[in-house]
Length: 47
Image 1 (cartoon, one colour):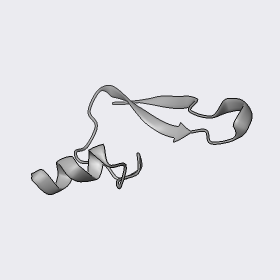
Image 2: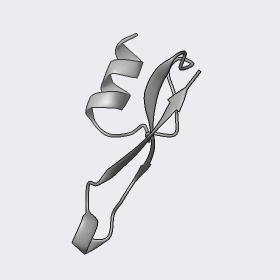
Image 3: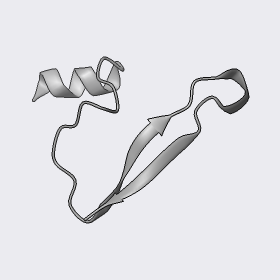
Image 4: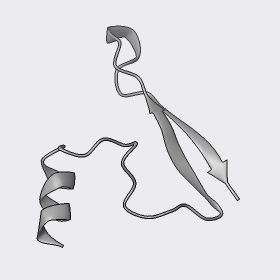
């Protein structure tokens, strides 16, 4: 929907707020915000 699009592209939705369930794929489980590792992403595989 247009509302979901705007939430995603205006960073109103966090990575924890999924749009759909993961199935047999990697998902982001953490995004670092500290100065020395800002933007570093951690992934996990979901069966």
